[in-house]
Image 1 (cartoon, rainbow, N blue to C red):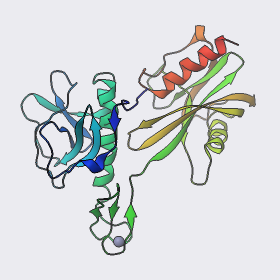
Image 2: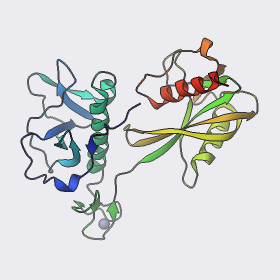
Image 3: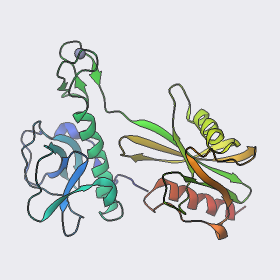
Image 4: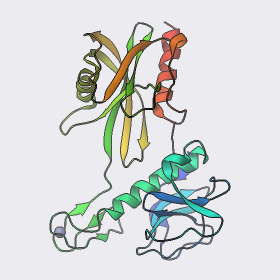
Length: 274
Ligand SMILES: [Zn+2]
């Protein structure tokens, strides 16, 4: 699972972004692409770049300040480095760095898309006391947006329900997932999404874990739930195929860094013990 390292701290207020120490870890983004060493893709680029706004302070890691900066879309990568989309660094760059880069990319994207007030269109300014951009004219304040999404692995005895999303490569299956609608609880969303996607009713939702997912700003909240009725019928819009599987009949699963894979493996272990 993608998780921030335990030694990463959010004490951003202790870092002065206008006077950064030499050991600052600087994540440089061009749009959604991160600057990395071309040969290893495993280290961040520390070089100073001029950006329109001061870098965003993320916190500290291994006792170094961590900041993220955005540069213009025509910025070329220095020799030995390249711009790489975050998703393609999964499983290539060390997981703790990917997690920190995921935090950085969400804040860079939020900052980039909230430069003007959504109410009166005045240019906003960054607050110094909290992570927010505020409109000096009308006072409207924008905070980083996080969009909750539920993931649900449906169980029936020792079987699990896996589905192939229409956008998945052929043969790849995972748990069901979908975004929450305004006004819903996670439990509401589980019942609705499972019914909409495959026509089943479920009961006894059971929390597993959550994972930040920076594409662009999701929080995936994973549950299991027990089959409680209905005939399996993929809706054909989001879900191309779905079926019941046991450990011995598993299809191709999502990559190890995903919460889906952790949810599936943990659930199979639990069902084995039944
Ligand atoms: Zn305003």
